[in-house]
Amino acid sequence: MARSPTTSDVFNAVAEVQRRQILTLLADRELSVNDLAATLNLRQPAVSKHLRVLKEVDLVQVRGVGQQRLYSLNPQALKPIYDWAATFRSLWTGRLDRLDAHLAGLLAQQKGEDS
Amino acid sequence: MARSPTTSDVFNAVAEVQRRQILTLLADRELSVNDLAATLNLRQPAVSKHLRVLKEVDLVQVRGVGQQRLYSLNPQALKPIYDWAATFRSLWTGRLDRLDAHLAGLLAQQKGEDS
DNA sequence: GACTTGTATTCTGATATGGGAATATAATAG
DNA sequence: CTATTATATTCCCATATCAGAATACAAGTC
Image (cartoon, rainbow over all chains, first blue to last red; front, top):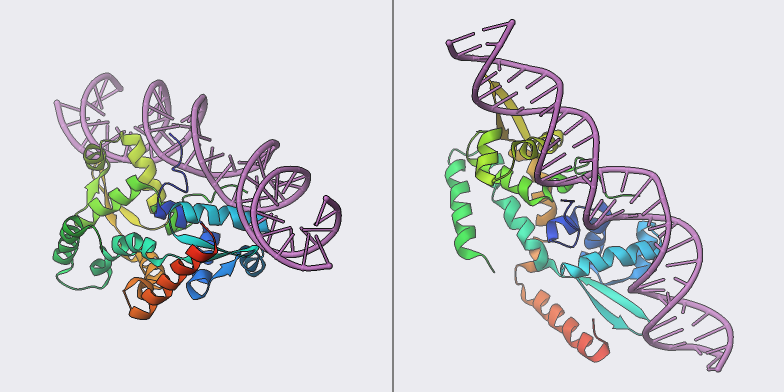
């Protein structure tokens, strides 16, 4: 078996540095492909390809404005990553009940699933 | 250029599902390689290789106990992921102005063009 | 020492990557 | 319609992956 495709889930999509930077930039404002290329010092095709990946996992959405395509962030798609990492949060905050908290977190995740 | 090595940073290491599961299991207790292999229905060499990756990015640490090698989680190594994701947290916490912005975006998209 | 158990490493192969170069498509302007 | 601007796609290739199989290494037992 080979490595999972970058489009298989948000974790794989976000593994690439450039894509994380794109998301960070889009957190502030809608940007066009060339805007991103200029800011990141990447060629336009490279940016287009990264955006394609991000769109496939629903991390960004596009809006066509004339000849431009403005990409914007879909923040909620990042929630799974936050939630997963948050599961371990009590383990580094050095509290006594950290194990309990972690187990509670796992349970909540199983029951809740969404939001 | 090729895809970044899984050992290049925590984000890449954690992109793989099996490795995330290993971390989740290790959050509860120290486990041996064979313990993990049995629980995850993976062959032992596969687990050893995953653990190697996790160790290289300092997500786990090993302790030799007799013939066994007990792996344990180093939770703090997950903090960068949590912190990064938390950066976007305010964007999905349902503030009204954000919702408005999003709906405005959708409306503009309807009038402008498709995705 | 010979044997067993636990783990790590090496080799292989199918698969996917990310960037550059070139090209194609889309939308607008003249 | 032609030219221009903005973006997407295709082709290429060096690189890395993950799992399986086989093997090596390590530590304990007899």
